[in-house]
Image (tube, rainbow, N blue to C red; front, side, top):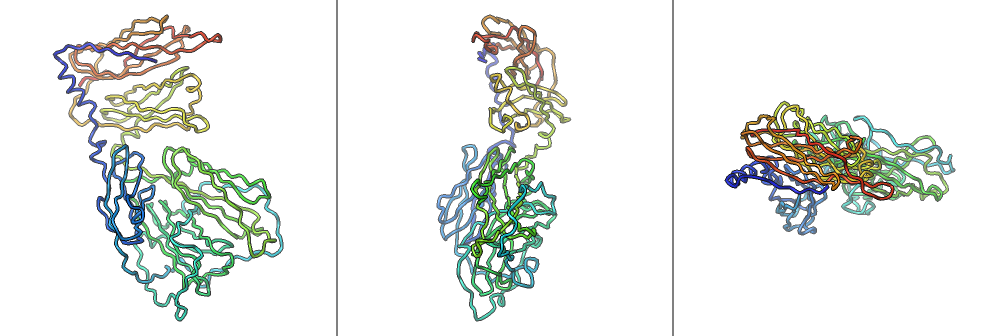
Length: 574
């Protein structure tokens, strides 16, 4: 629909109008860019240490960069890792604005050796599970996906980020017990409640990580240094799990040489570093917003394709684990993966089934299971309480989506902004746009309209679509009232598909509000709608010319709307 807009005003009021308009459209302080800032603008780190930068008060997508990656790198979630002495600048870019932190990296002071907490080890070396040398029953039945775990059950699996080769051959001093000189490891309160257990499988060490805290934690870094019974170092490094909810269990797999038969628990060590949950961040379980499907390779069941789709509007920290079992349901191997999955996106991974290289003729597994977990985060907005009380009720017409926006708060709102994202039944993006409504009184309903061709409107699926809502509350600068002295008149020219609308403020107060133009066919069935907001000085009016909706008959002849009406849904005096 094409729109031409003409405004009739007295020249003497132009200055006051411009001042009023400026006060109306100025963003509220909570949305001001001045409030958005990094939690650190200067940072000192030692080589090997990490720190998580956060852009406070920001709700937009953030791009993180480092000016010198060899000095310190930064992940997509703002985690800085110090690599070598020097200085670098970490930059967070959001909505075109840049926020910088100067990072200075120095050499690390040698740390005293650490020992594994008692909760992470057993009294005997961890042995690799035995695998029958005779072929067992071939895999049968349909592998299944474990449903959403309850907090005290296992949930998922991240893939370790190695700092060294997992199969290095570095040896400790064989003249003494490698653990004899280790001092007790001092863990913080949260880290003390992270339970770690290691199990040597055919091709991997499976680390089970359980958050026994009663609160979310923002990040768990699992540091490990494994030795076999011959005092050979078989794997060293760390893996990061982003956000864990109370009682949750996740998994990490560490690849090792399949010739390793046992882990020396006294020489090995494994311990967690924990970052506590940010009080300004909301942590969410997105398990129900994720779909995970798998398809086995056609060639002799040699592997698996795993497709993970994030249907939510939030970026997700996704962890999943494949657990392989023998005919007696003994766990023989595992594969864990962890990655960030952006909103409305799909990732596909290809995994080879595990093989026992020492006995290729044996059947390594007969069944497998998949578990997964997904978490999202969002910066807490002080106005979230008001936003949660805005309800949206959509209605489809031939050419438009009409959405009722209702203020269920007990207070006036200065404005309501909606950033909607529409998807079809296959979760494919259709269209999106931002629209704003001006002042809304308690309990009031106003409308926004989304116009598109009939096929597009028909394909919108409300289950996959969403709207991000932000509000501005009354700051006390204005006194609001309602009035019925704003009138609308229509001059119709359906033959030309043209409609002239006049909105007149007949009150003695400056007025703002919204109205909707409804279009009908010859049978008086509503086929389209379009909403507008207005701001008028006392006694002023505005005229708009609107082109109505258009469709075509079987002969490709245009069909126009037969008539229209205008309804003013909000008239507020300031």
